[in-house]
Length: 64
Image (tube, rainbow, N blue to C red):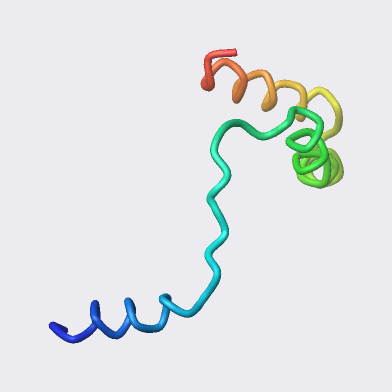
C-alpha cells in the first residue's frame, strides 16, 4: 500500500493532463440527456400524466 502513490505519480508524469471543466452543464445538453429516460418512463408507466407527475416531484425536490 505504501508504494502505490509514488508509482501513480511516475505514471501520470508523462501524460498530458486535461484541465477539468467546472461550472454548469448547458440546459439544452441536460435536456437531451434526460429525454431518453423520459421516453422510457412514458412507455413503461401509464403515460404522460405519470411522467409529468414524477418530473414535477423531481423538480420540487431539486428546488426548482
